[in-house]
Amino acid sequence: MSDLQAPVETTEGGARTGSVLGVAGRHLVSALVTLLVISLITFFATSLKSPEQLAKASLGRYITPAQSLAFVKEYHLNRPLVVRYFDWLANFVRGNFGTSYITHRPVRLDVLPRLERTLLLTLATLVVAVPVGLATGVLSARRWGTRSDLAMNIGAVVLSAFPEFVIGLFLLLVFAVDLKLLPVDSGQGLAFGTLSAQIKAYVLPTATLVVASVPFIMRNTRVAVREALAAPYTRAAVLHGIPRRRVVWHHAMRNAAGPILNAVALNVIYLLAGVIVVENVFDFPGLGQDLVASVGTGDTITVQAVAMLLGATFILVSLATDALAGALNPLVRGSRQ
Amino acid sequence: MSTTQAELDLVSVAEEPGYQRPISLFRAVMRTAEGRIGLGLAVFMLLLISVGRLAAPFSPTAINVGPPIAGPSMAHLLGTDDLGRDVLSRFLYGGDTVLLVPLAAVTLALVIGGFLGLLAAYRGGWVDRLVARVFDVFLVIPALLLALVLVAGLGTSVVVIVLTVTVVYVPRLGRIVRGAAGRIAVQDFIVAAELRGESSRWVVVREILPNVAGPVLSAYALYVTYGIIFVVTLSYLGLGAQPPSSDWGLMVSDSQAFISFNPWATVAPALGIAAMSVAFTLVADAANRQLARGNDRVGTGV
Image (cartoon, rainbow over all chains, first blue to last red; front, side):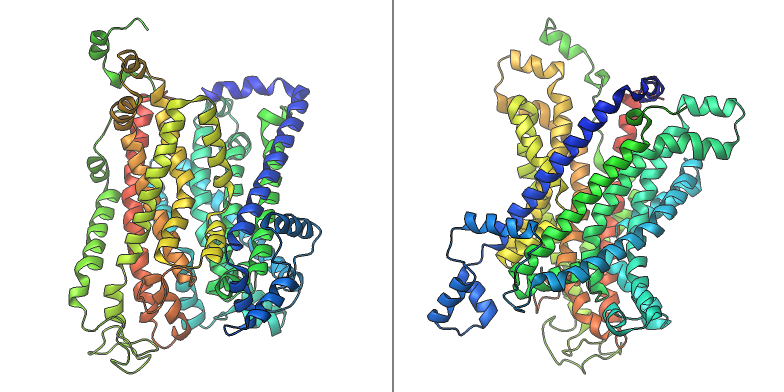
């Protein structure tokens, strides 16, 4: 039934621009609300520790009550939680992430280079995973119901059942331990290595995330393309004698673009969590490794900053994809034909 | 509604639009090769993690039962770890938490999320809108980020991990229950039951619940597999199971430092995790696929 609606709606054309802005506005509001919720959960969950616990984590187990009191005073921990929350949020928005209780360094200095590396890792993954996922998905859709389609599909299911760190370890075992082609840990190469060592440091983490991402993109592409290929307009295009390749990539793909883009967006969101695990497998000095290490040492300020940065990145990505989906989807954009 | 009870009894409910014929999940799974392989592997893994420990030659936590970080030998079939503990024994003991913790958490999430979902679907109106909104907000927060922040504040213990994973999965399962129940709640036989004067609880438990059980249970199976991956990942990151536990996730991270010297200490638990997760995923996927197919037959054809 949606197949029939699609061509009818597109003829309405540019009259829908107002609603496009409306949609964008709604997305922006819900993105801000999400970020606010993330900030609330982050701040109040990490504030469950008492000031005394924080003082001990910072100064050592055997501090005197006077030292503890001085610590509480220094970091203004005696003010009401709500006041501290708004103070923290206002500082964060202005780019002041605070000073770590543990390292006594401004968190900003430690976190920003890591953010850069994490984003680069995510981007590298997308550059490889999206084309591979699209190609295998289209292949599978064109062979819908055949043995090779079934085999690819089961393969994708099995692959998606592997935790990222298991995939990463198997790749590490083969390419770093056995074949000795790539470094076992990425940290050293990134810190001290030459350009080629720095590039090599990215290979295994990227490969792991690609293996973890492709099944999801593939399965979604497969279903979306299949639906577009089964639609009446595709059959009409075939009957018009338009070459098969053009029908698949021009007619069907354009209509499948919305759901596929949605899948890619979800995958980016997944990636921002996936990097947390994969960075720890390869000792990759990114945000995820910092987050896990800080949770372990009780470095509350760093946990807050990293959680917010990951949250904000992920909201930005969602917004960007929504905008892109709007631009691509003929239902929203209006037909150009 | 002018239909009488007698007429309603005559109408085959299976012909109602949007209604899914209840189909035995076990039979649905066994219908495909994928499901049979998954179920076989799942049974094997269940045996391994429950009674496998009876075959363990050493205590999983006894140190220096052999030389530290040694490869496989007759005395230690999978070698030893850095504390001279027997890897095989640790492997045989370490699988139960990998399944039990996520099972507990996802079940708890199903109960809470299911209650909220049913409440929303049946009450409708502002209750429905409120529940849906809260679910939406929590759904967009990355699960691992939420879990890490909660563990940062609460520290780690089995209870914290179970509750954290529950918080993560309540909106996910709740949304599925709400969707499934929402399709049932508008059907004529629900209205009929209400007109008969049945209590809300009766309607929900006896009319709605049996009709959503199939899709909800197969979704539950899928989320148990997600839960397995999620909890074992937390353990791998050092935020779940704590030493000297031989939880497979923790075993992998403990042994990664000497992976070149005794790879079996890493490979064995990693394979165990993979086998467990793949087994449950195959079963859940088979169930979901069969249900989706049944849905296609009832719904609008192309």
